[in-house]
Length: 262
Image 1 (spheres, rainbow, N blue to C red):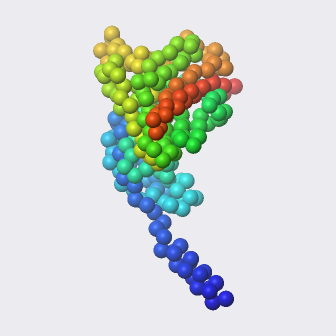
Image 2 (image 1 turned 90 degrees about the horizontal axis):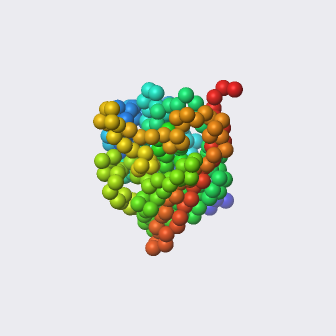
Image 3 (image 1 turned 45 degrees about the horizontal axis):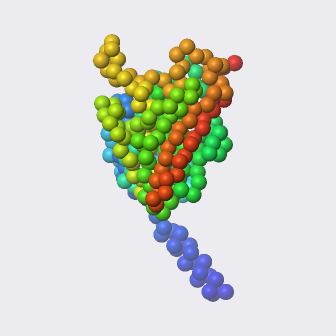
């Protein structure tokens, strides 16, 4: 009986001494640059605000119920906000978030392949991928679940639109003026994750009127109604190299409906 009591008190003491938070350092780069970067922490949901680029150090809860409420949010008027759970951000991450302008209506999507998903997420033994479809680009979260560094082969990646036209892709680390150069591979270490805006290169051009860069819509919404787009599919092809093997990920996305009031 004494042994059980000793074991109980040891476990209780260990639980009491285990840290309830872990400090994470990460960097957030937002586009547009004047977006509001907000971090929500703690059981009392206190918030901190930052400007881009933001170098952030926060104490993140380790207890799952509290951790699920702690978030990073990037927002701006007339743009769709992006929210990421702090528990999904790793120490030392650099997170690039490109906000998308709000449309008159918001389309609904589902992932058809590699596996069906209503929230545009996929996971296997090597990686997990989550997608948000914006007006001009995809917001992608990619995490390396393997024991080896992985390379995202951006130069070989492609976007296929609703008309079956193929386009090269660039990530948010590529400047618009460099878009016609070969796109460098991107390495993600084991256990680490990245957040990238993925844009078809040929959709980026310089406006003859303003002289500024402009990006065409992913789905070619000009002249289309939501009913025209319903049922159509687009495809993201992203090859990833892990331990000298190249795995081709084909993400087939279907437009299923829109959020307008009926």
